[in-house]
Length: 148
Image (cartoon, rainbow, N blue to C red; front, side):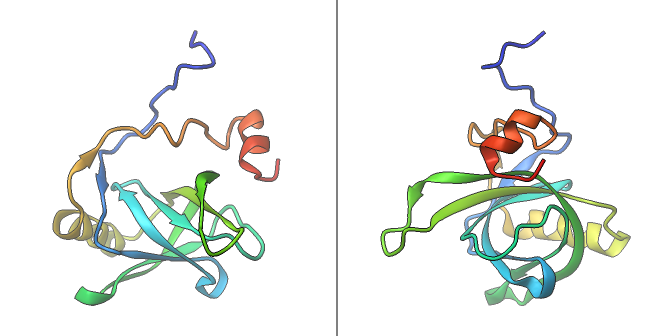
């Protein structure tokens, strides 16, 4: 049995860092915009500024404007979502980090995700200490501000 301080790694796919300004568009009519932190064949983590109603699952788009890369309508479910420690200097809003799992992407979407990783992601990342909780854990839901 694991102690409460020991993190169990549940990822099935290698994650790759993304430092090129790739954007995530998420939610109804893509009202949330964020910057990709890292990506794998199974999901993506991104940083965003919260506003509006939070939703667990919704479609997302990945956009890299300078290359005209655009992947649309990828169904997802939220795995983690929490405040980051640093506040934006010009506002009192605290940025958040969300991790989502791709849910049954089409064959075309899978190949586009692979293309993005192979062409626009950088080095492989180690499991992040910033994502210690899964929303499947009731205490984590309270800490992360997600509905039970």
